[in-house]
Image 1 (cartoon, rainbow over the protein chains, first blue to last red):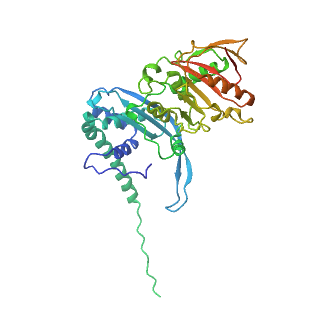
Image 2: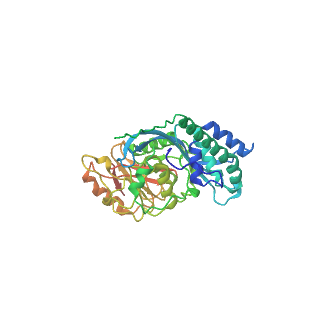
Image 3: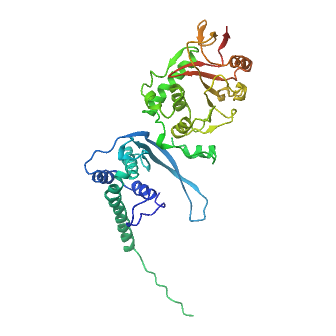
Length: 166
Length: 221
């Protein structure tokens, strides 16, 4: 999960691949606050479940280094959800379908993320969502990453090697 | 319950993508609805000839499922949703985009055109059924691996008079099913000698089913 797409550069609107990566890294409380802010007090649009949130297991595979054979590292819980906005929402002819596949067992979080995904594909909501939902969440991830890097950089040790004179 | 990846491998690369914009929703409450449908199907198979209503178990599915899976009886749709999974290839007699998309999305079941491979088959046209012995009859050691057929019929209480006898029926059961090709009953009778191998069928009309297990003896008047 942490090896996939990098946090996007702040310039330009995020693509679907990028916003799904952002949503997958966002905890529930942050996502809820950001979604409320983006909807600006309006009630979220009506939707139908194509697949109500359900929890399952997925096998995570790993490699040792770049050249090792793939091995099964272990299982993680995964929550997935798929919803479809009701026709007429956002005045788009094709109803937007939002989905979320997240690590963990938080159905509420998967619901929020799937809803955000659907709204990001709906023209009437897209600009607001990009500005008020994705931008702060991407900034939060970038800030966390910068802090972590700064902490790690503080422990950096420079090694000096004496040249042995013969 | 995340078998999508596995079933993708089974289906092969030439499968079209699922059209999510028109996809028929599945059960509202997957666990309890599929348990209810399973119980109704079990009841139908253990009392051959009895008309069992799946409507009663799932009053809401008819309105929701009536759109994209149009022309497919609600009972057949619900039964396949409840029974199929990634390990049970499903055969559809005719191409049906709404039904095949819904089955692939909700159950992860692979679709097949190979009669011998199919575990469940939905046969839309009871007048031109494929030969019964093309389906898997199971092995004497694993008779449960036989195919199960869902046959859409025109009516479950009209049509030629039949008398059914066998396990699950006290003396005899009068059954009328309209629109099944006469050759079906003949082919089915020929399979009786291969017991415990054989084929179990459901006749489906609207929200109701009649079960016909391989043990039932059918007399057509």
